[in-house]
Image 1 (cartoon, one colour):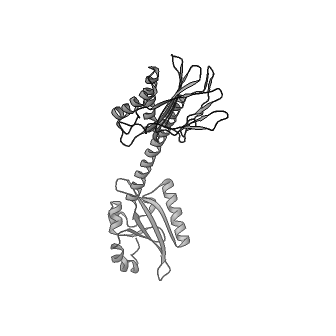
Image 2 (cartoon, rainbow, N blue to C red):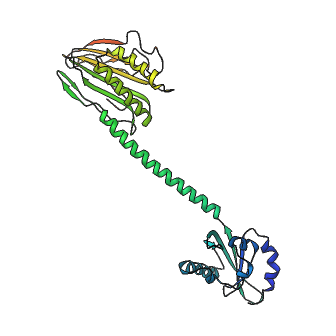
Length: 324
């Protein structure tokens, strides 16, 4: 091996003080010098490095890539790229390699190459990638669950019907993919027609689950022919005693028509007014007599329901923000 150039001997102290690994190569790509940091990074001794070339450590595509980058550095005078160092057991240590070509007074060219350990950065990137993959997987699962919940909720949306002299039209368009709206269009066995809309506070799966639970309880009460005011009381108590969700409430408006369509019983708990349209008359708002439900024990008024006499051509509109 050629004698170490004088300038390198003078620079060794500075190169040893650096926190980065340093190699110095001659114009034949032979390694003339490696500082202690480089030796620590590779787990090798100095005698295993001196006089060797990259071809003694790399092969195949890795060697071809490395030599292309070396050539680019020689052409441009400097270069910077990501690669890896081989450890004593051939483990890969990711590094950023920076090279610079210098000339000595006699015109000989040398490459001074520094190696910055980016192992921690790569591990953090890998952890972030794995975390993102888990988040994407969970997002797909949530979207699948939301789609299923939406289909279930849509299956509970009431359908229009013709019932004697009464025609019922419905329209369901939720504000979100899934929410807390529910409705009922249900003839009973005693010649009455039940119409009901309910809006649960909040949106998303939680509200939909609560809405479905209220729906089940409501259908049970309607099937038993429970008077509308009493139904409000029982639903209010059911939510307060069984669900016990802090900050939760719901509003509800219900109408029950007799078979001839001439008489309607109406009760509402905190729900936006129903609209009663009668030909030749001004529209009338059917205001709730009771407060929103699910918050207070005494939310339901002493006389929560009213009776309304209807005429042919009258229309009554019940609605939530997603159901009409």
